[in-house]
Image (cartoon, rainbow, N blue to C red; front, side, top):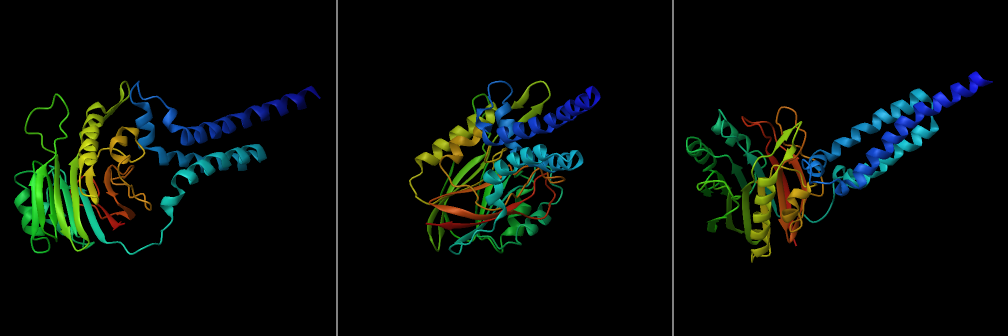
Length: 317
């Protein structure tokens, strides 16, 4: 009798571990904004890879099967419900009005060995607009030559550029340079594209990189400062219709991008992980819209960059 009771208690102990894990994962999914950002930007780090918490579900279900535990199985449904409520909509192709425009965003890498080949890959979706970052002086003529037949209008500011099938006017630099970075760091631009659907303000941006370390966590202060400057520029934009194309060095779930994401609409369908190209873990390349929506976003084939290009279909109100 004592031995049976001991065995029963032991089984309960082994069930408690996966149950607690399920509750923890569900809590992180639902209450990720409650994770503090003061120490090592742990909140932003979690939010950057938030969808991957869903990988815990098959592990928990396998444990439930092996343990033949109804309790563990029921607990496993908690992260399932939390994950689906956050990301389930991205798995569904949404129907609606026909999109007005296809756009492409790509960080081409300043070490890209084949700029011309990369440019040819970007022609596939037949986009109306193509935004590029990390353009270098030696590579720029190759990109311009390869894209010119299909995109007669283009403009560059520093290391960012925009190629367009439509006339571009009012091209200007957008100052997103964080304090402490020397002059000549130009990674933001704005242009008005005169599309068949009306004038659209197009922003191209490349926010500062972040670093992840075992001791310091996520280092994103400059990225966050640059995002605040970009958000201020978007808030001051007078045109109703706005498209932002850029390498923002984080996902739309990261609170560090709130100055931007609070002012624009993010994609309603598709994960489109873009970085790193060899094994994409997150979409840090972004396409967002004001006075409209991004109906679908998807990744394009790999180029000579460490990022994958992404494309999206955009519609305006």
